[in-house]
Length: 388
Image (cartoon, rainbow, N blue to C red; front, side):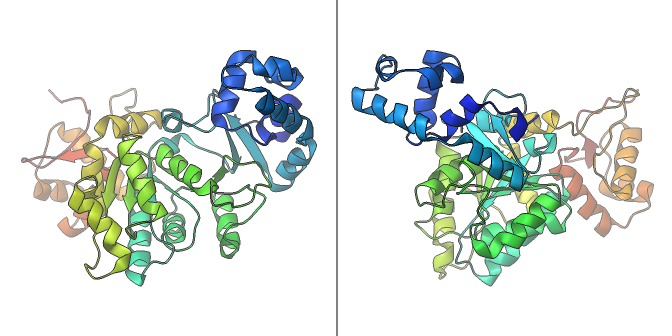
């Protein structure tokens, strides 16, 4: 469970709050001293025994630890209902822990869920077009209905529409902040952030509660968006933009699948997406089903996330449930389970008593959850026990 304010040690907070102690330095300190109590009690000379820490740096570390104010941090956490997850905790996100430089600590409002192991990052421009807003909401809504958590940066434009689309669909969303959780940035999204928390979703930051939204914070925020996601979708992005940086980071450093939505060839808002598609490091997608197919090329990530979140599990009697499924979707799953093999679309529609047009929409939802797959014969469940 996340560490609530009443369970966080004074030494841990002092170390996390000390200015000048970033993730790399903190890992050095913890590797050398073993415990946060020993770090807090270390002398300047003891700091200099660590490789790469000179006298001037050691003195600055000692001073910043002494000047940190854990009680003020605890008060703000209490006021905002925030808690803390530290690397090594059982509930630290597994995908995020796999990137080269995961955050040492995460401040959160709300609660992370096993469902968040299957998350898709949706990013794009703050100065987006009406087309971009519409598509961000559309993709986020449909992916949310399929059980994917939508991760974005809480910014104006594409980010905000992605969060809203997920909420409207009754899905989960994670807003990764570039400031402390006691601040609302941008201020125009104050109400949206409260809606996210009230809906049972999550606001998350690697920065202490009162941290300001500084320019240098946002590249760090972007790597967290990528790190939490099995894949990243870019809806609109200029050639030089934070969204494109996030996507390239996902592709080149985190091994994530990257997808881009094409836009007008004469629109500056689409130059980044079109360039990424042309250069071959982002896959072209025009529908949520395309997102599924792209994620399948990184199948070990998706399947691992689905398994970790309990999706697609079999009951003791061998039947496969469709978690969070509608009644119609469960009828489809039951029919495929009874068949024990792939069956044609028209036959499945007849068995379920559903019009083919309606069936296709429901199949897309189940396919994106990883519950079924289509082949040359028709449709079958993934991993079901074949009938004799």
